[in-house]
Image (tube, rainbow, N blue to C red; front, side, top):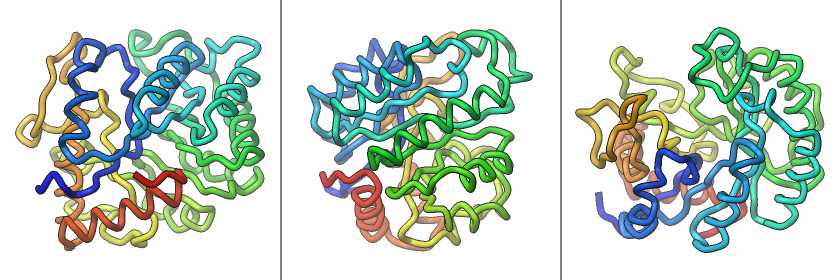
Length: 281
């Protein structure tokens, strides 16, 4: 892949502690790989300052602030006020990563920062964040695990998001995709899902409308199968750490899935990225 192609990562977490030892090198290397912008998603009040600092010092990093469902039970009382303050301080910031998650109700406790919040609490927090995004005219990045019918119902109940929203690493039923598109959804392609052993040869991205497609890595999470990793980072106690440079693998895999060439796909994704996030790089 020519490094001159404009590549955009719609969803990752550069502030994640798993990248701390490699961050300085990554901040130099990613633009050299042709990565023009990345949306760095905060997940809780404690990491929003790090997201803000990265965006302030590197103009190709787009900040996003949100309370992830894994952190709902740990939220301080003034979380909503602090979220609004962060968004107002960064006019280009998105709202995310936010959503609903049923998987955490049965997940191993060691994977979570604290006791899991029930879906009712998660939904209340999500509604607050969606209302704030609508009021401030910001895009939203949505997380969902084993809960997409409920998440779709919630989206139908709240005011429509004028800027639209990104469905990150979608793993729900294909039958719900048209309804999500009708509500303004974009979908970001994640190669870790598409290239995993046993994945369907052709998923939803073969048929999605051209103007609703984005690409993501979710780095340092969701590492690619080892035989498909173009870039690697040292593993941690939980396994492989996803290098955000593997965005190039995702673009190549998506181009193959859609039967198009890389320059055409890169131009399409760049236009969609600018439309949703309001930033041209």
